[in-house]
Length: 483
Ligand code: BES
Ligand code: MN
Ligand code: ZN
Image (cartoon, rainbow, N blue to C red; front, side):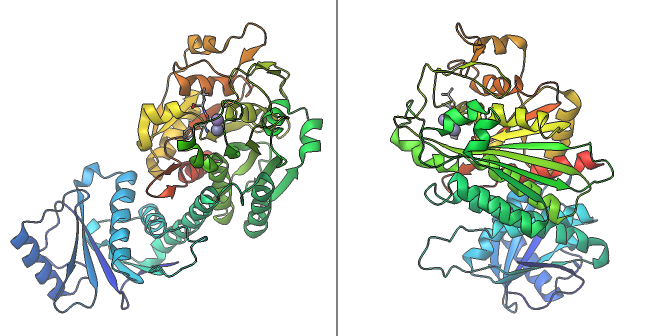
């Protein structure tokens, strides 16, 4: 995909004209031929079309060779990053429906545009054209290959934003590809191989530990989840040293990497189980984020950790009722083998803080069905142990467009994890499932400032498949920590 900031657009198949509700079409608009402007003015008056938020209209103009997409943005002051993504995403779908290969986007109607907006816009446009086609024998969908962002501002001031946007969108596409891959291809071993290849491509170090090493390091909680499967687990550690002057400041990103979650002996029902190939969405998010940061050469040190395995059932699998150990030395009563993600994460976060010495930590996981019920696909559920770090995440949410919701963390929620026979148990029953899952992980981060993102409801949906949830907010989070 090519995205260029230009003063004058070359020929394109499509044209997006975005406008806030105060757009005045009776005056010239930069980049829009006068004949088009007059035709559009006539049309919107005739049809009483308003530039309301998320109003989209495709029109063919008599003398214009292109498909023109009118894009209503609504009130200027209400326009946030997530609105940009939603609305421009729809415009791209419109272009795809018309098989456009290239499109111009007239920024003139938006008013003052800075590099950050161009980055957001670029990332949104490129991501909007994403499709997962690997397994389709007939690979002939219309492919959007080029966007030209047309503006009166000096392109030199904005092109860095476009370049970053493309890089971010590519990392996002990689995360979506990984998550869309079925479990028969994307095994823990394959996920590790993908991380190694990405490290070579973008310039970060990747170390992969096999099952022998995992057991030697006493990652027993992780190991117990993995042991029911024929596929061996992998601990994947990715290190990007973007700020070598402060080598001791390291942001840790830990992603849940269940390449398949059958539930184990607490077997899931058939409906919904197929979606559990996506249970490594958290790992895709941290891999995507570190790719984005490395390719943009962000000045920050990031260590990403993924404990990758499958949750299967067999004669070797752990059982409901087992008591297992953990790298931190705590014993855990497994009252439900389907609450496996937190077990793998417990060891992964403990490894990150002790062995990798990360100083701030975010973990991200498709962790609880309760998050789907509580928040739906609109927001990521967040649990944290640190006000300042939560605020950084909230800032990152604002710039990245990925919405979050902070959940409570009162001590008495943690009481639900008390076990009669072990240090703690792995589920607290049906109450406050997302909070309690987060607090389970909190027990293993020691004193490290930590935020936990539950992306169970945002990582994938029926219509679009994997969304790459988490890549953008984690990238922005690390960038904010760099400053
Ligand atoms: N991977 C699932 C959570 C999930 C559910 C993600 C739906 C995406 C969509 C997780 O491992 C799980 O099974 N969680 C259980 C926990 C329960 C047993 C306490 C759940 O949410 O039902
Ligand atoms: Mn599960
Ligand atoms: Zn799971």
